[in-house]
Image 1 (cartoon, helix red, strand yellow):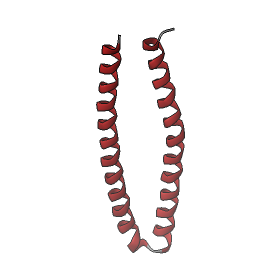
Image 2 (cartoon, rainbow, N blue to C red; image 1 turned 90 degrees about the horizontal axis):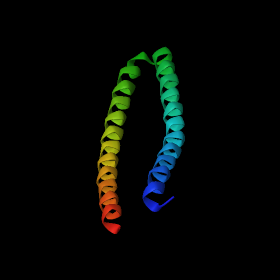
Image 3 (cartoon, rainbow, N blue to C red; image 1 turned 180 degrees about the vertical axis):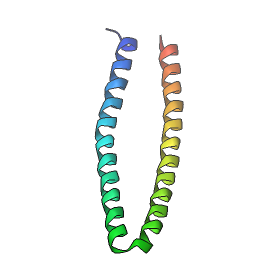
Image 4 (cartoon, helix red, strand yellow; image 1 turned 30 degrees about the vertical axis):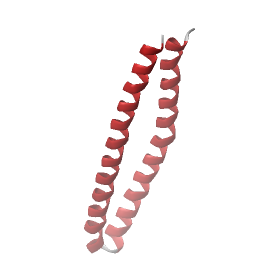
Length: 88
């Protein structure tokens, strides 16, 4: 197997590892947020809407961060592909 054939396997493995690690963390955070929101609704309903607004803000910030990482990754991937294509 040469380098051009090996690279897709390496990339797939790294992406798989990334999503396994970060997917579980995201589910745990979402569960904690739901539990906290329920607690707020029970104990201090006037704060639950504010907490919902806070979660919306956090989600928007994360979306922007992930979008930036994705775009940088695509650019880096294109540069890597060009480098590989011109290497031989």
